[in-house]
Length: 598
Ligand SMILES: [Zn+2]
Image 1 (cartoon, rainbow, N blue to C red):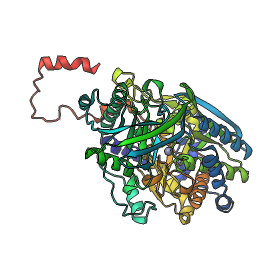
Image 2: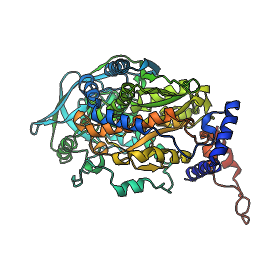
Image 3: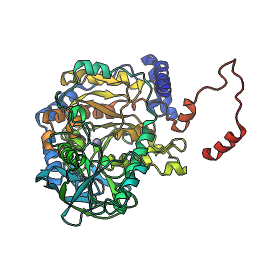
């Protein structure tokens, strides 16, 4: 909290100091042109020059002639789920590139962001009970699960593992068994709608900046849980269990029930199941909670249960690369065409549904943005570039890879304990490293919170941008775009930009049933998409992109982040109490601590 508050305050001070008169702004603009200072550092105008005619044209093209659902059906129904590393995702990369070309974009191409891991496809999965009764279950393979050796039939057993030593009692007892791994959880009644919009009270609350400390233990607790899962997987494989069944987690307001299963990293054994070295060591499926509950209760009551199952999956390589789809509308202003405005979403998805809302929605909205702008034959002053990222679900790899290659990056720690963590959880290892092009990008806009229409923008604590966006959304209020919040939001691809000081934004979207039912689930399908919401999102995003490409200056930035100083800045003040006696440090204890710090 201390850091957050102080950084926001710093930004506030900066913007306040820069609130000069328009005349002074013009004067310093002329001066800056001589010194080639990036335009985002100049005082910003008090009034945005908005092209209301273009607002109207974008609205009409996007609302009356929307093609967003056609893109969605081709992507979700024809190409299907798009797990990173998979052949389907390669197909989607090529298809989006070709569609962007067909709609009139220039320079559509794929960019390699690096090696990812294994290519994988689920061909078929079924699970049923054969005794004490017959029952057909709802289940799918966890991502990157190996196949069973054809259909297998085996007694089921449930294991309870809170910590590693709990495994001891199962030694020699699991060979040839199908293992249920995971506690039965509560299945609350669904007494609230799973599908909701933000009402005025919620939007008002969202506009307030929360003054509360952040839970910094979260990362370590999370890593511990992942490490335990990895050990359990290895143990079960070593014990020659046939396969593993895990219960589906819950969604918001009890959404993880009624046939919905959530099937992502949490369903298998460890975050990096996509790497050969840390692969799921035996077949693992995630099962609907009601089906899991039945078997669980029978086993707890010592009723023998026999399960038959078949996991049929295919690996298509151990060293698959990830690619981002990139295309643009070239800038036309001789002075500004080398500057960029970017828009995007992630093209990859999980595999149990078709990734329609996560993030087929953000993908087709970004495509529709480009289609609208191409159709209207806009001549943007800056270049507008669309990027459809991949590897987002495993750590935002596509956006971070692209940003590193083009704009800059935060080095990560290479300390041995840090190297054991997934790369996105590692501590920073030094100051932000920048490429010259980091000064040439005005901003990035992202949609990745499902199918809901846009209600506003998370400003990522960029106070200087608030008065600008406030003017941009004024003519969009009738479309429901009303709210700006200083809050940060995380977990989407704008973070790669924000991390190195480039204005990057995720919009506030109506939640609909994203958190309750569709996010990473088998129910993430075309039916969950709301055509009018997606058309609205494309219109709003197109207007933001257009405004950013046309205004005289690049968007104002926050001060350059210094992640490498974070820990130090959070440390308690020293020598504070005038009455405190010098602490008596035990010499031995001090000596013992030293090796840890290296
Ligand atoms: Zn997503």
